[in-house]
Length: 106
Image (cartoon, rainbow, N blue to C red; front, side, top):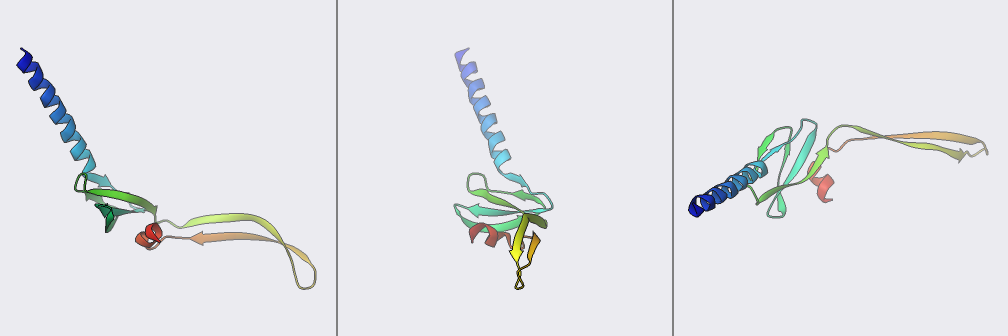
């Protein structure tokens, strides 16, 4: 009887380990994102918008980068012109990441 219980415990541990390995071997990257993948801590590749297979415990997703255009607005700033007039300037910056590897490492 004790051998059967030990066998069931071993089987349960084996099943849990298999589930962890399968979960760590698949990464789903959405369409508007890119993922920088490292193998053993060094840059391996960049993937975008796909189901990606990873080597468990060797590969890891270092960062996910949003590839959509983003908008940052700043509060109005008072500016004095050459003829001493005060103007309020509204600033809006549009930016987009085009090279995910450079955005992560540089």
